[in-house]
Image (tube, rainbow, N blue to C red; front, side, top):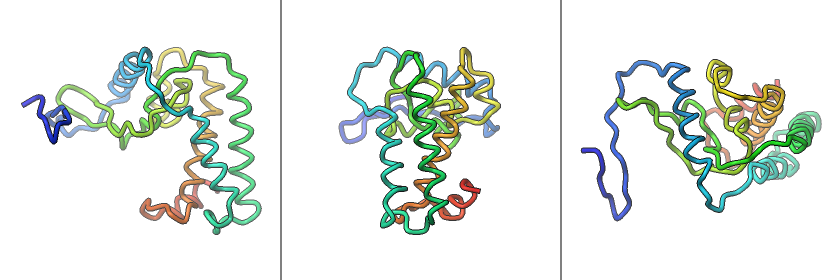
Length: 183
């Protein structure tokens, strides 16, 4: 069965893939197709900077991130601010993005890779999405501004570090990951 209806919502069923690890070229092709499809979608979505502002607020608030000391708080705040300033100067076309197309949000199906977990869709430059994928994937992606991608990768690492320090974070062993990112 390819399409089923559940409580009035449509879901597409995909048969599982071979169980082999996805190849970088397959991930690049899938992400490029996703971006091409999203390029012309016109829906109200937050801008990626809204997520950056949330991370900045979290890090700046000692009640939300009580484990951060002065230097630990300054590093992600400085990184978030400086990376965002560099990115703001970029003159490129923004579009709808997945928001977090990391490997945990890609299913290997018999029809090829499919992206899931679209709740973090946002507007921005494609490099924001590419900052979430492994190096062997973003290095193959066409027409990438690698200097801009470097800034987005700094920004995403700082955002993830901020989330790991959140007292409400439920990521398994999140605080250890937060320490590792800051280190």
